[in-house]
Length: 445
Image (tube, rainbow, N blue to C red; front, side, top):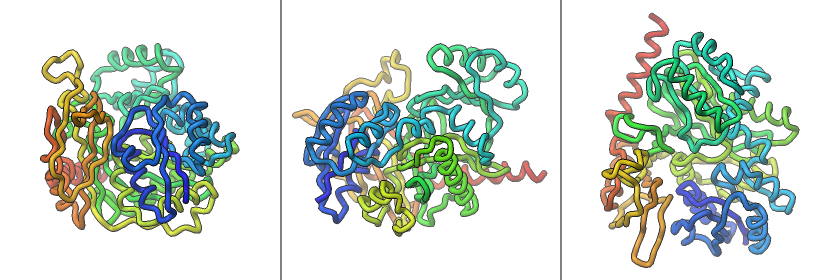
């Protein structure tokens, strides 16, 4: 029997919990969560509710339950150094130490790492600790992206043309960011299509999982504000309609070099997930950012397809033996659609759309998988919070069938809810393909 500690309470962690419990190692799952996730609770032998910035409480729970290994889901406990604390307590973990988690928590650290070790993939960029020099650098770029240095929950990036229009507005945003963050990174705005490549790393070996495309925008046809992610899809050939094997190989090679560079830089092997957000452009694959854990929603696309025992994968990451393990994913398509409160991502002051605690009804769901996120289970049913509620995942032989399965399951969920019905559909996929054709045409004309 293997005792596994899972830290985290979202839909991503629900998918991780499910992967743990599919193991043939007779696992017992113990979950430490900020709020009670009913999906995780239904799989766990024991649950403890607490804060992620209280390492003593987490370690006490780990020892109490006899945890033999830990899997950390979200970025918060990683940024608070929970892996360091677990290591001292003699409990190995799938997740980077605090110094290595800077790959996600510090945009400037990651950009500087690639520059120092001459790893391709960086756009033009500069880091600024004060407002001085920002206006001059912005004037050198055709378009800019502004990134606060630190965690922003996937919503802090500001893009010219989307979130602001003029250089004066860019400067105002930078002034505001520098009041609450140590520095701000200014980058060249890239044109292309984004993809997520979640890689498993044991400090030396890096293994890619199937690429996924996330959809940050709140509304149909990529309109509205950025969110934590409204849904995602993957394809049965483990590519994407606009993405060939050469581009995936390029993203994997960048991550392999980053894994080697961060070990040289810190002297510590990276053990966990290195999730690269990449953009395929006319001049090759560029790095948007790294996350130090599985993506949410992207974990829900790839973990259900994993046929290799997940606990074997965890132990190989911890022991540095990924090169000896055959990691296999099913050749199937997946479509994830997030069910969210109707006011998710919108201004709270709008009384028509304000996110409030509202009951949600889940009818008969056929074929799809449900992963609970911010759901509160009360005696009279399920209630939403202001955040994403349920990740609905369709899995099938084709993308069309997976999308149809996911959309059918969403229709069985009732309440003051919304979702993006276009994720995984043929018109939106065609738009992505045409976008890349247009970009490549510009290059050669």
